Length: 84
Image 1 (cartoon, rainbow, N blue to C red):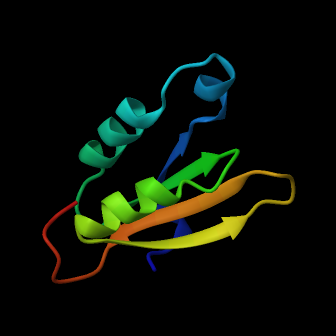
Image 2: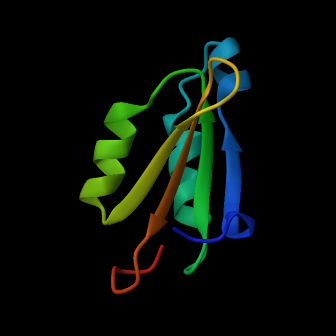
């Protein structure tokens, strides 16, 4: 995994509280992360479909449960995968 300082943060909790589908915001965040960087996603649930979708695109992931009820998922591409 990349150093924590190399991850761009994407917190979808506020979008979900407003009833907004977060996938477009997450997709935009994923698409704008430069090579050698990663995306740190914060969500109130484990986004299993997103993890599988990005895995099919060559992303690796690490999942953590936050101190509350939220989930933190780190996404990055391993060296040798196409650029992020």
